[in-house]
Length: 85
Length: 119
Image 1 (spheres, rainbow over the protein chains, first blue to last red):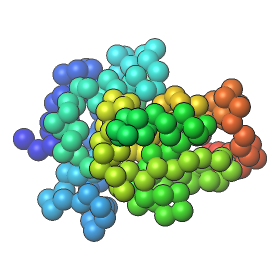
Image 2: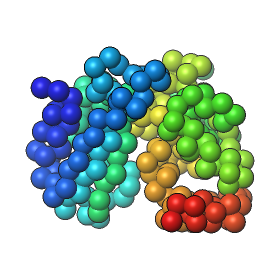
Image 3: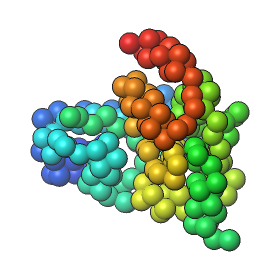
Image 4: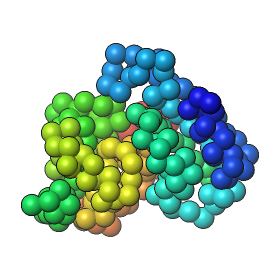
């Protein structure tokens, strides 16, 4: 399973999102710090789920970090998150 | 002094602290660069800590805030967020409100220009 697939699987299981978009932007970072051959180092995630309603910005991000798990977060060099609402 | 003590002392001694990769004059990561750029442009007086210069601080700051990524912004000892959160708060005006509430001086016109440019 690729990292992108793991991200999707874990976020869907945790939040049942109405919108989930995971983009591997690694190629744009070729030659930069953290780039890994084969990609899957830099991700952009857009997620929308009822579960985030009422949470502070920090709480929302912590919830996503927690759902992804330390192992996966540690493998990813860069993770840009947009979380709604 | 342990990494945790160094971190604690740094955020106690400075109203605004950015833990980042590289320094404010020469950031070494796009996310760090964006946050440092916003603070520089808004004329905020902030201390920068280059986590790449010290592995103990690099891991220590993640443990300290229970936050897995760099950069991390602290205002008056309180963790505010990383690049995504600071970007959102800059564009929404919440960062201005936070600085005002905490008594941190900044250039309001510059903040408005950032918002105009990203409208």
